[in-house]
Length: 579
Image (cartoon, rainbow, N blue to C red; front, side, top):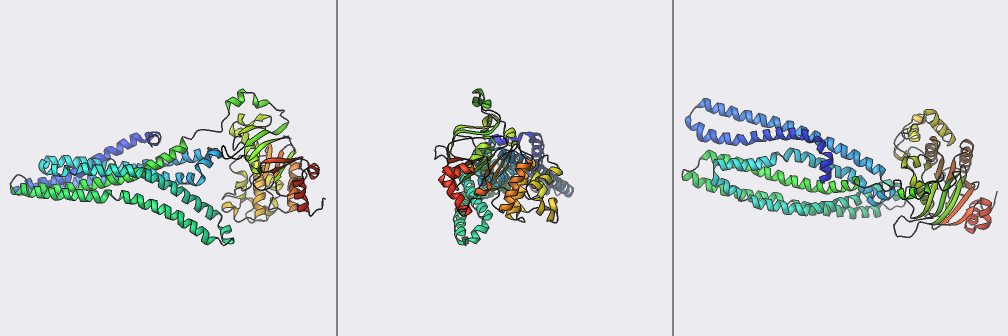
């Protein structure tokens, strides 16, 4: 939390200092009003001088006007600072999240990152504003009120002062308990967000399988956990206000009793008792404001720590100097575009390997087809190829150079990829193809043509400028896949990866698409992950995977003779007829 303050609040110190000064002057004016009232009652009124009463009354009115004006100005400045600082935090946090490696994203989890971007930054925003609005005003009212009461009547002030250590002890006790409790609440909120995100994304599946009640029950449990944690936190924080009210009201009773005896004895005045009750109310409100600040601060500390965990997360996918120094960057002939050498990898460090001792080489302009059952490691190969994750053992080379020797932008720039569960954004068709890259309108149209998407795009009312719904809800499955393929081809990549991206296409369109790629992108290395043998049978190399291990590698004809599993898949899909 300290690092957040130093990094993001420091640029606003001068503006905050001016706001604090204005707030300080406005608060002093508030403190002057009861003092002037006591002076009028005890000193001015007994003189029966109406002009003096009006003059001092006018002074009270001026003090009130200055206090209100200065407090409004200071509060606006505080809101501006807190909004600006939170905007920068959100921007930096979002940028950091965008550059996290897949392993780091898996570690934090996506729902947790969403929660940190939303509720945690909101808690910081609340804290920044509250500290500036009340962080000056409440302590000055508290300390100033006590000091002024001592100038009025020291004996009555001592009665009031006796309650403050008890109030301070309660505040410290509650704050120590609340901070870890709020951290646990945010973790529960992460799980809550994850479940809501999954259920809303998969709502059609839930309805189709009549699992509404089942998912509702799961939601009820996680919702109950969040509510229970919020209730416990609320019960702890609820100790402060009633305790303060009881102690301060007892103090007020003591002040009135002592004041009554002193007025009766002629050692004090009625106006002072009236001023004391006003100052007592001011001090009570100041203490309540401070208690609320502790509540906001407890949430903000827990949220700030969670945000800082992301912001301080180091780069774990940079260029590895030890690989460069070992001369691995130019170990293989550059004509071999993709090379895996004895690669082993597990998503869970120390767990069962998802890819085991995998080796193959693909030349530039060749096509690699990958086939295997679900969970066999097909998409993992793509992740390692693009260095979404680092291998545990072995080496992955692109263009004869170890992927760990590339800068991230340079490596990713070589690829055009359609992932298995890829995303259509809420943008135009052209915007989804270009995706913020420096791609001309002509190149967009060309990509749509080669992806066999131009037919349905031209038939749509808005053509390429038509806006798409979130996740392309107004497109069919095949249309989505063709737009995604156009996006991958638009930048004319050196390596084109299609990860099960033709599953919604008919056989004819699928065949035309692959033929068009070979004709128009002859130097592009093509990697196709497919469930259909027809999509990869003409590939230069076919890799068959089972449980992360290669069980077959070669051409279609070679695998039909040497790999029983591949030949069985082929015969099953073709009805036993090879054409």
